[in-house]
Length: 333
Image (cartoon, rainbow, N blue to C red; front, top):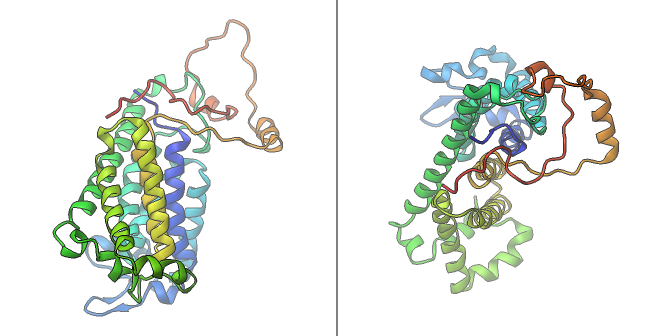
């Protein structure tokens, strides 16, 4: 079974945290918490939404609570102690989705994925989610490995169904079927291209072939990503690149940056092999500081070379990992 605690799932956690962090840090308290027609004043503290951190905190301290959430998300994004920050991350994500007046689909995706990734993070023994687990450290933690791998598999299934629904739900609409939907979105006052991009976008929208390409390309990407778990890994890499470019273009065109970061975080888990570890080149000066701060005493000759106790492998020096999968290779499906 692939060991789930790699910097790949750590990258997904960082992207999710950064999306929510941007919403809280770059929006004023008055913008986030305001009256909404037919719904009332936000935060709405009724039913399950009473569990929101904005409902638990005093009503006159929304600004302080918002910045406290920003601090929590900074810690999550840094990768420090994923085991300790897993539940706070899920709580803040739920609080933002249920407590602010301008929540969007990215906030909904984030609360679902952060909750599922908490299954993986709660068993993560590392000090930083960027480190590679030392060899032999996982065999004695088989229940935690099983739960952590289950969390990643559930994220992959969730993302697959999300893209399936996003692609199939568009097909019954005539504008998506005939290739004209992006003409309307491109000229929308709320979601159309910003002024600096107009000279580039307007000629494309004025061309029938350009509009058709902009309309049908997202459908093909979404349906391809929905089926990615059934495809060979080489196709998943291509779909990952297409998906990242797709979501970045949405962010640039429509300003939905939190949505883009949430979806790219989900794409990382969906398209990368289970148990894979990204190779990251760290400057020599930083590596020297890490070695000095996390050095492990050498074991005497003949000492047991089996799995290390938790306190020991948390201090192990992070090593440069190859792109090869940690543990047994994950099956294509």
